Image (tube, rainbow, N blue to C red; front, side):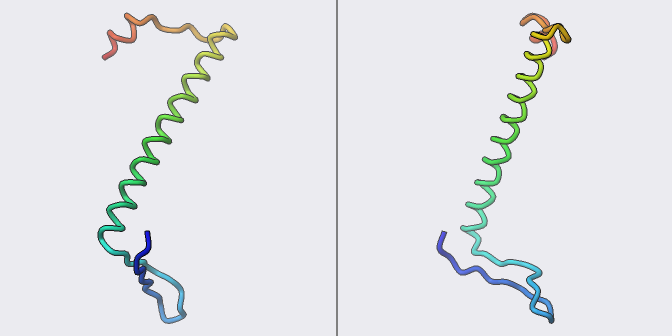
Length: 72
């Protein structure tokens, strides 16, 4: 993404905002959504593995497929 990025600064030169071309912004937001979805999937998988571990340790009873489908 080679584009002209502009920074808005305060009177001391501290960057306060960034201005990017619209097409770059669209690409950035699309990539951000993909990363957020990946994070949700990772989190769900971690939770599932924790449940399986708890079941293996005898600390949690798992639901049957019928029970899960009834919850939908």
